[in-house]
Each structure stands twice: as structure tokens, then as C-alpha cells.
Image (cartoon, rainbow over all chains, first blue to last red; front, side, top):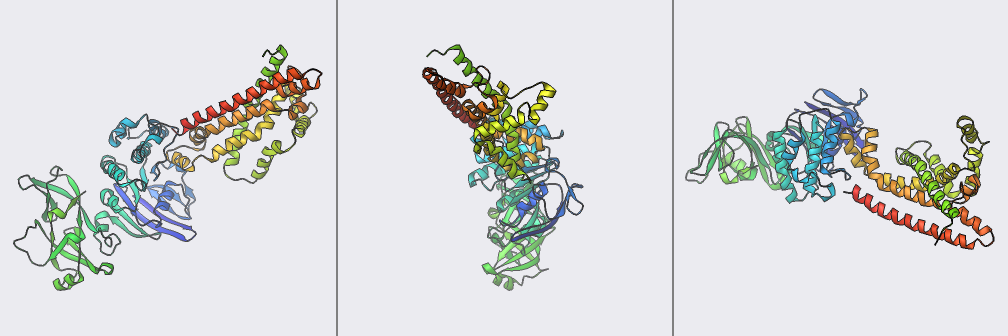
Length: 356
Length: 229
């Protein structure tokens, strides 16, 4: 468990945030600039001494202001990846990677594995100044992991990269998430990074926690800021049930039913993460006929939230334990009589489903 | 241009005095620069002023103050004589001390500038990677400040080659012991028909100064390349 409760005041800004998330997988702190994300990361790392509160990681108290506990930064065993990679300019890539390794107690992360995972083999003898931004961040991530951290903190690691570099490095991060048992706390204000990387989400607004929970829940809640975005979508992690090579479709288990998507490369039984954009979901109360559609998912309306800015309504549809979200017109809501508890059909084009 | 054995002796002596001035002065200068560029403390302005004193006080006054403190009757000088049998006033070691004190502010300034330029973010990164205070100093701060330390050494060396007032006051002008190039030039000018000697030694002085500046430039560029990759 990662349990954080922090109070800190700057002139004109006050942070008062508390959340607890499992110490497994990736937790994303998400929110607009100036909402306190970086302050939280700095306080967990120990680079900022908060006015009050405590930080406990896996039962180890790193900081407890009331009890007068504050473990020194160098003894917290937290890996930190900063926005500007902060590689040591006087050391080679190899020297940078070894910096944390040499100072850490022995641990499971080996230099050969990291070089492999992050594709660093060709960079080892280079100096940081000769690397591209994306390469630098990969080295910085490797360096942090090799310090055998109990937790990896990443503070907007992709924010200073352009779209192409970001696209180059995101797959590495996704692999990292799968390959490493180290929990990650990841700060970003970019929704695509949240969708790709998060297991848990902490939504921050003006120094306060608006929501803390799973990504699936955070994405599907009409009353949360993620659903108020243009790119609102349900994000689901589903198991591959099988492939139909002839029809060039793959089936994903979804509650009692399946979702059909264009043919995937993933193996049967593997989990894939998909995005179902809210504005691509059509709602119906009876089965349509003579339609190109592949996916007709029965569910129950869980909540209806007005999205006044867009003259739209956000409808949450429970499908077993999972949830879809649809953005429809308020007129459709009244015509179909949509309200919590009503059974409804969600119509989703196979082509509208995005595999992440 | 043939130099007489006495003139060669003055050249060798000058280089030796300057080397020792830097050898002993630079480590202290680095420590003081670290103190001044680190966290604020109550006595910092006082230390800062003290360090810069030789730069603003007439060199002859510095030499005289050294004599008061390190002379055989001075508090430190008497102790050194009584305990170690070491005398500084009017010796080669004394000339080196005078040069070290005079060039000290220049060395501290050069080192401190490069220390102040070290990115604090890198030190934070080193902390998160498990490096303690001394470790960070040795493995990050000093390597990154190395260009400034080298420049400080060369500037201190060059200044020591030319130091006159403090040396002649504290160490006198003893040929072969404390008579460095500037002192030898002055002595030659005081003796009838010494212009030729003065001219030769002046030429050597200028040559050394130019060589020093070129070395500083080359070293600075090399070190910068090493530090920034």
C-alpha cells in the first residue's frame, strides 16, 4: 500500500491531499498544471519537506511530520525520473546507469536486463549531451530502476518530448509496466499517457484529491473531469477470447458477452487494453436489425450526468462489474427514458474500438 | 638569449614558489569556496570579506601582517619555531606563503563561480540514487566544478609569478632563496648597468605569463568538453 496524506502551503496555493493506492502496478497522478502533482512527488521523494502529513510505502514510514520522522532522501530507496532527465554530464551512459546500482543494496534489477528492456545497448559509451531527448529519458529510467527502488516516481517524464519522441518512448514504458514488479507513481497531464499506463488514478484539482481508484472507474464516471473531456472514453482491460481469421475479427471477453474488434496480434488468454470513445457509443432500448454493427452489449444505466458545455449527457452503463460511458444528446436521454436502473443496449462499431 | 646561472636560479625559484603557493593554497581555496557557495551561515559575510582582503589591501600591508603573525616573534611563527623548528619569514617557504595568501582570493573566486554553476537538480538526482553528502561532493560537485578548479590553479600560479610587495616585505629579497623574478628585476634595476639583466628577466616574465594564459585556455576548453560530455 502507498499511503499519502500531505499538507503544504505556497503563497497562493495550498495542497491538502490524501490517498491510498495498492503498491502494485502504476498509479497516475493526473490533473492540470498547478494542481499539486509535482509537489506530491517531491514530498514522497523527500526533496520537499511538507508542512504536515505522512508518507508510508509498504509499511515503511518515510515521512511523518507530527511524529518528527523524515527519512533522508538518499536512504528512501525511491527511484525518481525527472522531467528533464538530469543525467550526469561528466559520466557516460554506462556511468550514469551504474551510479545508482553501485550505491544500492543488492536487488533483483540487473544492468543487462535494463539495457535490453530499454534498448540502451548502442548508447552505453555515449555521453548524455549526444543523446536525443527520448534516449536521455530512457537512460534516466534505467538509472532509477538500477538503484533497486521500492517505488519508482516519474514526474512528467514525457512532457518535454515532442509527439514523435513520445510515441517512441511510450512502448518502452508500457513494457516496463509489464516486466517490472516495481510499483510506479507517475505524474502527467496527458490523457494518452494515463490511458496507456495507468492501473490506478488519483485525480487532483487545485491541491485536492477529487478521486482515487482504478483507471476503469475513473474513465467511466460521468461526474469526473476525464469524462468532461472531448476524448472521453471507457478504458477496459479485457481478455482475448479467440480469433476469427476468416472474418478478420478478434473476440474479447466482456461481461456475459464478447466485444468484436478488428483482428489482433495478441494471443488467446492475453489481456489487452482498449478504449471505447464515449461519442462512438450508441444507445438503444430494442435490438436493431439489418445493421453493419458487430457489438450489441446489454447493460444497465448506472448514472446520467449532464454535460452542459456540450449540450450533451454522459450515460454510464454497467456491464457486469465493468462500465461503459456514452455521450448522447439530452434529447436522446428523454426519448429513451434513460435513468439509473433502466436496461439498455450499447451499440459499438468494431472499428470505433481502439486497442492501446 | 643566454641567461646567467643566477638568472636561471631566479626563474626556477619563481616557478617553485608559485607551484607551492598553488599546491597548498588551492585545496584550502576549494574548501573555502565550498563553504561560501553552500548553505548560508551567520559568519558568511565575514569569511567572504576576509578572503577578499588581500585583493584590496596594499600588498605591503599584507606582507607586514604576515610578518606580525608568522614572524619568529609572531604568535603562529613562534609556535612553529618552538614545536617544529620551522621558520617562515625570510625563507623560500615564506615566499610561497605570501604568494598563496595574495592569490587566494583569485583562486576562491574562480572555484566558487564554477561551484555556483553546478545544477542543483543533478545533486537532487544523486541524492535519490543513494549518494550522501560527501559522496555527492566527490562524485558530482567536484567533477562538474573541475574546469573552475583548473582555471583557479592557473590564475593563482600566474598571479604568484608576479607577486612583489607581500613577498619582499615578508620574505625579503634573498638571491636563490626568496628573490623571485619580479624581485630580481627590481634588484637589477637598482644596480648600475643592470638594465640588460632586467630586460632579459622581463622577457622571461612575459613569456611565462603568455604561456600560462595559453595553458589556461587549453585546459579550460579540454575540461569543459570532458564535463559537458
